[in-house]
Image 1 (cartoon, rainbow, N blue to C red):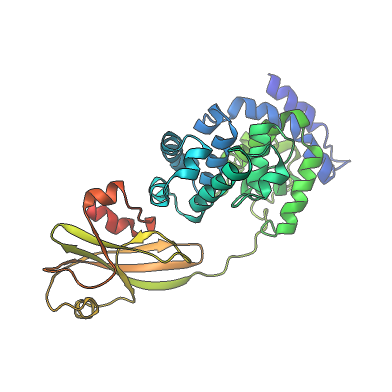
Image 2 (tube, rainbow, N blue to C red):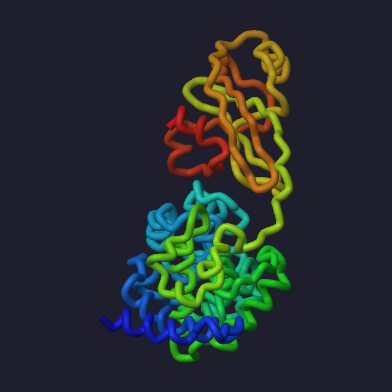
Length: 365
């Protein structure tokens, strides 16, 4: 009954003869939002102990990644690297192995870079300051807001895609949420109305509603939303039009031929360049284009080998797609080239191969 009474009180704020302004709608979210979050917050490992380090790691992992996928990675990461000092000291190959499968590996590298900086300049602690947090590598306004509010209780907003969607629909905004100016304006609006003593629950409640009610894909579950009575998009039937996003540019397609080179029970891998896509990660040897068997042998500088076609694969990055064909190539002797010859056990435990090659990695493991 307590929740229903809150919703009923909220509904009388928006009679037909007097429409609320955007700021008033955002202010009206507070009580139903906090009440809903207390009852519906998901049990997540990083919420059990919202310490600064745990919040920071979880938020970086959750970027571009589903919550359920992150859970086992987070637990494994915390066990291996329980604090900032351990993260600062970990070898990069070990760090990337722990991150393997999460994608966007620059995030992991920025974690280590930031941890090193924290040890050198901040006594091995994340600063309890929104502005100081934003100065750190890989930490933007959203992550800084999440750490500051959830770990330290500082009343600053944490505006991600979920929050942008919820706020746009509640206020009926048709501004492009992919524009930084729009995001900054929403941050300012939320900061002006958020409760100073409950910043953590307020931010997490908005994020949670965007994740499981006002969902990113598909129709929003308006009947389950505590903000339904003041949501302009729901009231006016605009949830299919709001939020507004600039259409993404079409991704370019690249053809590749992947080679699983075997010799004496070991398979060849090599390290990618230190810059660019998948920088510093290991990969199976591959070449541009879809090549035939004879062309592959010529590339390798060998005359004979046992060649077996492998399944085709596709991997989608943000701006490019890889369309891959593959071959298992069993060699009598090792060809020239900057290859590292490893066992299947090495791939399982030591070397990090990005998800782009998972179709072929599975054939090894």
